[in-house]
Length: 504
Figure 1: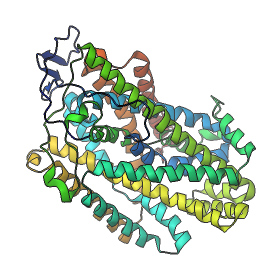
Figure 2 (figure 1 turned 120 degrees about the vertical axis):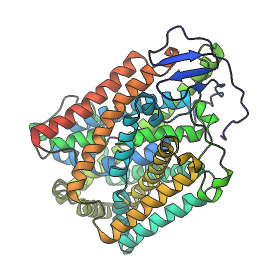
Figure 3 (figure 1 turned 135 degrees about the horizontal axis):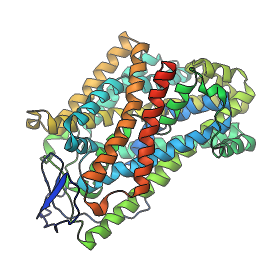
Figure 4 (figure 1 turned 90 degrees about the vertical axis):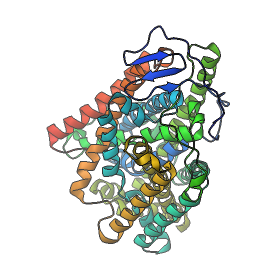
């Protein structure tokens, strides 16, 4: 959906019950400390039931380390009953997704701009955190290592080639969002169908039954899980049930480029080759007239659309993939008892190789290659999503809040951050450890989980203080998001002060 530049400004009714930080005058909605948002018509919502949407980015980012490695490892150590924590984690993230969408669809602004409307230092915290956490090419390295087992091609070569390919493809795309949505949809479809088929061939009904019933053992927490070795891993695994760190925040930018809600009035980011075709990016978002019953009916349609995304495409697909990987892990442990020991030791490559060997024994050598192919696919999915999201978020904050940056098109800023992170990744792959120094990773893991607790707090403040009262979240949404803030921050600091370690 292209930006609507012809829509005329509307006139808003005066709200009788505004938030303390939001004041209205005819034609605008003033929220926080930044420029007021003009009133414009809310576009009609598409049908609620759909196949493609911005959730594909969250699935691509979420189906990775947690689903394919961390949770199977926990199941092998503590049994499938530990999976009730995954159910809590992925459900919490589905609600976070809906609340992120509330701000983005109501204003066309990213949650970063929402944070800046409260206080600019909040936004700069996320700007710095993104650079610290997401410039390391760890996902692509893991995928390239799996590809090396299939093809014999050195993983460093394929990883560097993959980085350059990502940059070239993004630079040549006319509209980056449209390209990525289509590519990721195909890749995720292959991943979901493929892992389900392989799990059905390698596993059995007993594996599936224990995987499903394990999600209902609420409160199960063996004493061993409270050790300094495992408690940080358990907390980190719950945080990694779906997209972790700042990935939910970037989702607001994908909603905008999709044209969801008031995002239809914002230009979309183009590839470097087509940057000159980009329309002028407004300095603020827009608000619709929440006093108009017709506008509120359209708003409810948009909420139904994004709820379908959250419940079926995000929650459902993420759950299906992690069920498949958990079945696969149990099958591998039964066929090769060494798998559990290898996973517990933290030797990820050896563990994946042993799992592939067990699948080969179950159905032929091709099954082992197929499994490793899925690991490589996960690395590619995550890299495509992360590099786009990182560049998109940094470009958005730079364009709006760095003095002098508005002389550049946002597509040029996007390309600058994209090729910058690609160049850094290649240097790390060639001359340093693929995931960065281990001492740095502990700090980065802390920042990632801390960001999740921080964005829950920001969500509560932004949606309850800056939005018109008729479209603010209900009390149960606030309760769940508040629980997320307490969980992420509380468990993280408990781990830090009780055991002297952070989530890893």
